[in-house]
Length: 378
Image 1 (cartoon, one colour):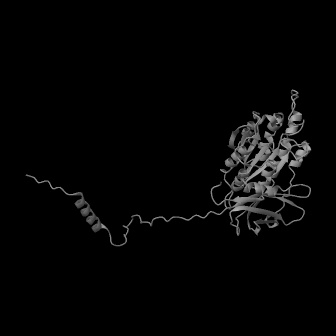
Image 2: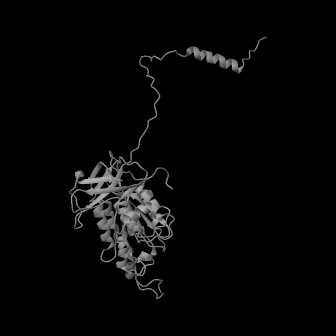
Image 3: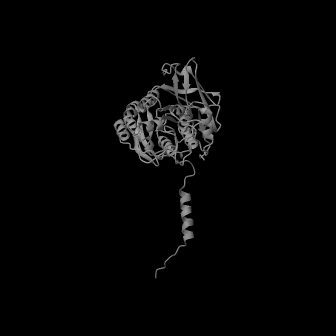
């Protein structure tokens, strides 16, 4: 008769532990000849990220001509009043990543042929040979018509087929989408090239129905190093070019705008120009970024360009849309790209940038500042 020996699980575990203990070496393991050497476990790397502030700088002489003969020693830059050392300066700059925002409201239908014609200039002059572009149209909705591409023919074809639809104009929502799209494009760093992030808006200076606030859009644009340019479409010119319609009375006098002007004034192309006067746009731009939840209605296109270092080019009087686009394209490829690593001024909040040229008689335009966030945006 065979006897079956039953071992308890505890007994088996104790025996296994003793055997393992007996087999464990008491000192360091000596590798066998030709065998792999045991490496120490990898240690966690501590990565410190240093922000590189980029700003396009446009320099013109007293006649308004672009100046191309400056180098690093001619510039001075301060951040919140603290002098900074320029890390990189380049004329012409890195290739562009650009979003074209085009209003497709029925109000600008008479201007549609001009906009479609300007598509060639947008592709050739603004994009350049090594740029990439996307196209976004907006009315009561915001529509991505063309994603980023380096194919200029594709961009020109998209713009040539733009049609006007409803009468809405969600300008701020379209700008928010443009900034979001640009935020994913590679930025230049101190060691590697990237793309300059630019948004070019062809629109009236009117927003109807957006959920986004202009201040929040401008803050995000500053955080993402996006420069905004705009071509102001004139509704007065659109009305003058439109075919005669029925005699239904207008809410406002003929040739005027639904957007109110200064008290007691009638809006005409000349008074529209007054709406884009420089005034104290820099202070207003800073206020807009700090008060992201407030509604801002004063000159939104001029304000957006001032806040990001771009330029607003209205098209009233004798300047056509095509000429305005060509003017902006010429500047984009003839400006300086300046960057620096902020030192001595690490406070969160709004940082004022001031760029000066040591040579007299020259006018300088750059980003007026940027917003340094300490956490998630509100």
